[in-house]
Length: 160
Image (cartoon, rainbow, N blue to C red; front, side, top):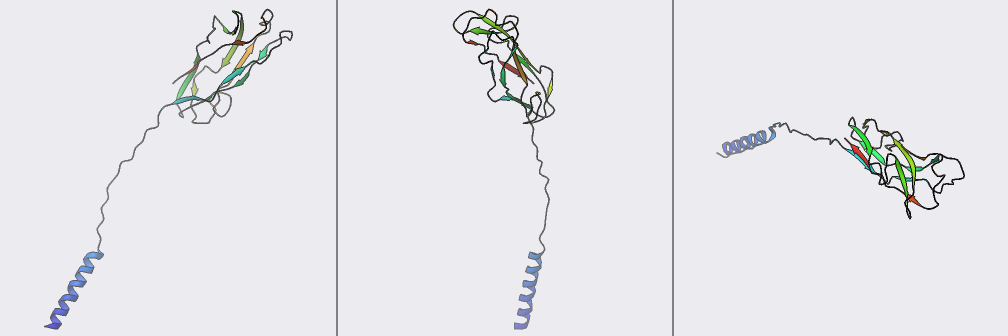
């Protein structure tokens, strides 16, 4: 009887080991998704400074431009426009801080459709995502301008 019991125990152990050794598997597909936003961004602190200009020296006088950074999602199209500035009257104008005198100037940049190349990539013509801007006071514009400080504030808008 001991022998039969021993054989039964060994068989149960072998059956338990065989059952535990054959693991089952199953698969499940897991959907993964995401959306890249269509976005265009201005950043940085753009600035245009003419500095001190000498009316006895023939112009034009070029402004020193710190361009804004501009980038758009790759393949996305955008255009840049402006509001003409606070003193616009058919042309951009700097206004005297203490009087009512004006100095005309020009502001040019790429207004054609720009195609996004991703972040930190040139789409505005000034390298590494910067929008190329040229500012100039034309020759003769200072001939009758009183001495003093002049300012304007132009808002750039990106449409995408």
